[in-house]
Length: 442
Image 1 (cartoon, helix red, strand yellow):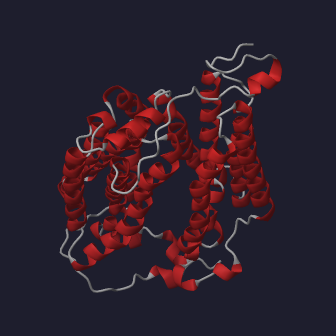
Image 2 (spheres, one colour):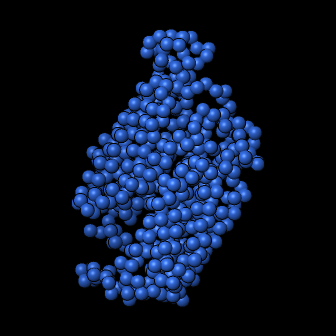
Image 3 (cartoon, helix red, strand yellow):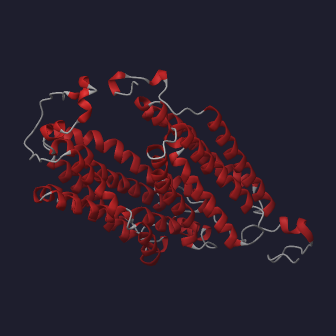
């Protein structure tokens, strides 16, 4: 079989195919510095974008406490007879100038859940639109729309429950396109060996937005009133949109201030890749995370599966499944379509872990979940730092055999992690984590 790459000696048999380059040879450009680069500036702006996005999503959870007449809520609280010590509300002096509404617990549930009615609709269309028109404007207007609707939340509440539910659903429509849009942008901006770092920076804003906005919303309600929660976060969202429009470009080619070296580095590293296919595995993983979360909670709530059983099953699927398809991807020769399919399936199945070991901190120690996540995430960052270096050292010629070694090592680590977690994981709050102050004592 003649080698498909010019300049290589033709050879027959398996040995020859194993030495074929896995990727077509292209002139390599030295990696552009990360500091002050256009691609990392994009990651930072995206970080703040998702920070704002999640702040706009969760602020209602806190503000709703002040929006509802406490007498209405306490009258519907059927657990007060069983937990009398928790039934009496704590009297705290704070600003109470905001208008109150007579919404019972069921109505509040509809209000909080209405966001996801819109959110689920625009997931797949968002990915399709982003592939056609690009991600910059789609992401920008998705967050801008959410911010503007947030500003109108107090007015919608005055109109009634129906208006507020519709408004929240519209916010969900806007937010639903954001992740697909960001993935579409990274398909043009992220060099393959920097994807993990760039995507982790940009999406980390979502978690921080939740962590910061929840207590901050409480402080705003305490010193001002609940309407300012929506006004302040809405204004921040509009400011972010202005910065995003003026500082971000759809592709490296259209960026006004990017250095020539960085542009060549990004374009050469992506030269042999279809942009949509590059983003497909990550989009599949993200979609799987959403669906697996719903499935995991249904298994526990409706089918009475134990917490530890669900965590083990989802971790096994999310770690061994990707390992199988990752190894398979190394043994398919030069079938690029099948390689993309296997890697997409592998990355997608990894989304099951979000309802497996990733959330187990809250199962075993709710009071210390933040600390535990910080510890585990610190160690989880190490592979992202050393992985590209090790992979590059193991694949000096980019041959199939070299990549088989890389894939097998990664798969072995996944299998080991799955087995270790399944053997030692717990599903209930541990004695050392019990704390009356947080209400987690059994």
